[in-house]
Length: 331
Image: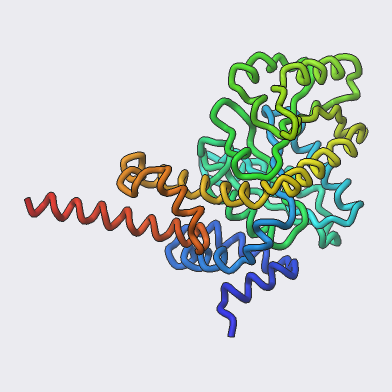
């Protein structure tokens, strides 16, 4: 007989919306018992599905650039193609409740009758990197049930680039005449995305000029490497949306053809786990566990779920800390 985690994982694979909501709530719950259940669930998700299926897309850019509007236009385009779509919208946290401040900004897109669209907002909780701690495991839950999982960040800055290491394809959204180009270059942000979209193409020449400037600034890569395309789009009129969607598909195809997708998905889990350990136990704790490089090698070589590995490393670190205190008190 299947365990509770196994039953929930099977329901996710069927696309059961109630199971999706239950699983996401479980991942967000910080209490010890639900955390253990969430670890078991994540370990029960089919590895093949998590490593090779679906498409995990990140969308980022400065606040106010039109990310939500563009996300809405993309969602409508994907649904017309009968793709099942899930969205994680990471919002600023309320200083009072700790919850998402803009939790309903994308829900207006979701019609109750559309069973192929699922939208979830979650609070960033002030974490550097632009994503909350729960965003990555929640994206895997959604990946088990949907064809496309879109993760939208709060915004991008010099430190808010976690979206790159936690998604297959990252779209950076810019807008014309924003004055941000020099800052993007200083921060090295233009070296990170796999697709660039210039929103508000309906502005005409100023939008075309911005796209040309971005194309000139993007690093040129060797033959066989992915060349970052620049799509001139309008979330309002729909101009360029097909090109942008095709660019996402082309990048996923390139990842598959070059045998990079499985490795990239594995690296996503490892990057998330190492960051969790560093935030919980600090650099000293990570070093006590053997250092970041050793942790990465162990996780990549392991047969267990990275979430099980994370729990084991947490327990190891707590034991080392307890042993050091006990040794210090005895001396």
